[in-house]
Image 1: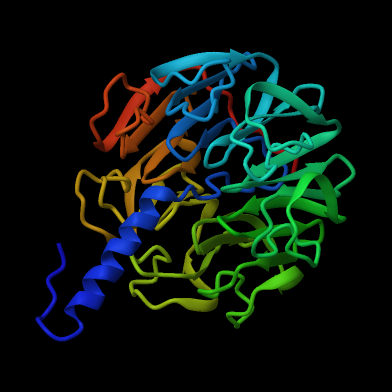
Image 2: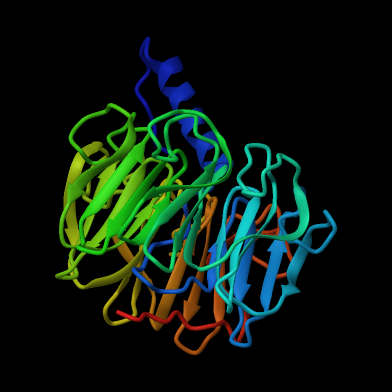
Length: 382
């Protein structure tokens, strides 16, 4: 634990530390990295996990207080249980889930206090309900949702307190509303969004208190603004972001209180800063980050109070540290992480008070543990 010199600021410093930890506990990051047109076979939610197996079966485990399993109950499960068939891609929000079926239909269930399910109500759903057709990608924010249709149009609905729906107002939406066209990939942060257009340009909107939009300011944006070019993948976290450019370089910006940017400092960045090369996919957690390099090695950095970095310690890392090899996909949840290896095995580690690791225990894990086999491989059409 960091030691502070006694001063008149001690109370303020302690309060700030408590607030940071509290945010790490209550926040679900976007957790679903936007990999261009790659399907997401895993989703680390607020305190539960989702995984799609090779046969299209969707499995879930952990907390189920809002019906986020979609199995008609609110009972938690410390082991994965099967939810539905025919699924190709998933995304997990704080307490709500989005799934795309093989016919392109979008289904949603779980918490719905802000209309994040998109079914024109605020009533939570304990079973999946169909929302729309012709969908190829989704990203669930904390209490709002984003979807890309086959024609490249981006649609948004749910909470809009900070303009995270990108429609120029702060009024919540109970049904999907079109935001922009020509979108290739999207990632929903806690209260802001990032989208990659078909030309590789990156756009951002919503809350910007820590420079998480990357436009050099701290002013929120109610409509999308262009940030940079040449982007192939992006992931939005609590207040920091990760982006991969077409040369494989990784860039980060936003809040950096726990070293989650990976630049060796704790200074926030209002514009993107280069972190490392040779990266092919990323996932931004609440206050931690994960990257898979071209050789399949998984790297982690940032907050590590529950062992979510997976390197057998609880010491935060200000620069990336290698965790394991042979990884094809990663999803950062609320102080825990899920990863799929090239043999289809699913691994988990970190916080586990609600059984979010899925290993039939409620004990945190400081290193990855295998949970199940046969998880669907991510497929790109790029």
